[in-house]
Image (cartoon, rainbow, N blue to C red; front, side, top):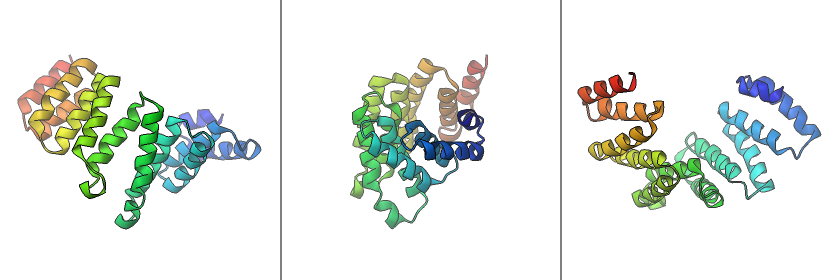
Length: 206
C-alpha cells in the first residue's frame, strides 16, 4: 500500500505508512530508501540526507545509496550560503566518486561528476579535464549518454558548434524525446538556426 501511494505521488500518506513500518522494522533498507526518496521529492534535503546517510552506513558498498546521499547533499548545497556549501563539497565529491568506483556502470554517478567538475571553481577542484574523464567513461557504458555528456560540456563553455555533432550522434543512436529536445534546443536557442530546428522537428514527428 505504501509503495502504491508512493508510485501515485501521494507522498504524505506514503510517508506515514513507511514511518510506521520503520518503527516496527528499524533495519528495513527499502523503507529507509523510500523515506529518503520522499524527502527528496518534497525538497526536504536535511531529511533526505538523514535517511541516505543511514543507508550508506548500513551498506557502504551500495553504489545507489552513495549516489543518493551525494545528490541530496548537492541539492542542499545549492540552497545554503556559499561558505556552508564550500564545506560540503568534499563529502559530495566523495559520495559520487565512491558510487562510481563501486559500480563501474553507474551512469547517474558519472553524470553527477561531469556536472560537479564543471560547476566547481578550479580553485576547489573544478576542471574540464575531470569532467571529460567521466564523460569518456559514460561513452564506454552508454554511447548515447557519452555523446550527450560531451555535448553538455561543450554547451557549458558555449562552444555550440562543437556540441552539434555530439548531440546529432546521440540523437541518431537514441532517437528519443530526450535526445530530440536537447538537439532541438541547441539549434533553436543556442545556434539560432530555425531551419535546422524545424527540419529536425519534422523528421522526429513523422
